[in-house]
Length: 325
Image 1 (cartoon, one colour):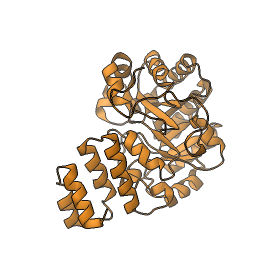
Image 2 (spheres, rainbow, N blue to C red):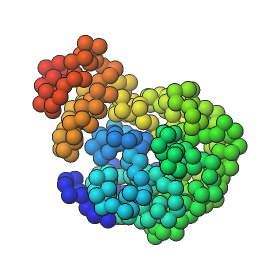
Image 3 (cartoon, rainbow, N blue to C red):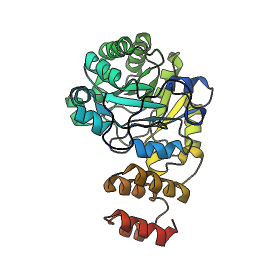
């Protein structure tokens, strides 16, 4: 495994406790009898700088964006561009797209000194992923998923390294239960359930399906789908019995959500500016995150002005003159 060519670099992180007393081993979070609050894997967005931000606001566990395992194993360039972490970025789960057990096991072996666990994406509904044999099509291949979990377990020597899967559900929930039970028997650490079918996008989440899954397993279950506030997270925890909740768009819009803020506080925007500049975040990513964060606190006129700004200095000047940031 190579280190990054730029700061912040990958560092070896021994297992044990680190940031704010949180364990390096993600599975230990589920033994605390408190709701585990998780930042979902998000393409382009759940990178190191954003993970650093949400960790300041009561996010317990973060995932990397999905990484194609085959590319990661083959290419040093892919490893350097797709995966960056640092001493404070823990507990951390690296999410992979994979369709072959050996390739996933090799990818897990490469990241095992630098992360607390890996996750297999069995939920991405995008056409390109499904056509390549990745993502949500894997929910129809329970034996393959189980084999992938087993081979990662056999390849990574650290017994505390977590192996999880993130799934969508079938219209026939008994098929999903079968998948989950086979994964549990293979040694999966926990299962995150996005409570929609692969073909569903903005339809209501089937929280009843998540509850059925939780009731049939003895491992932790994480609920995912349309969680946009701490109150909603706690309500879904009550409805499903899930051990954790995972948010994506809710955290993009309000990175301080898990700390109980109803909308993004200005302190969070200030923190993002400091973190993004420190990490050398590319302007497009820096700007897009601010556009999401300010969606609820900006007028239409303010959005029209802010969204077309084209440089970091213009953004900083605007935030100072408009919000005093």
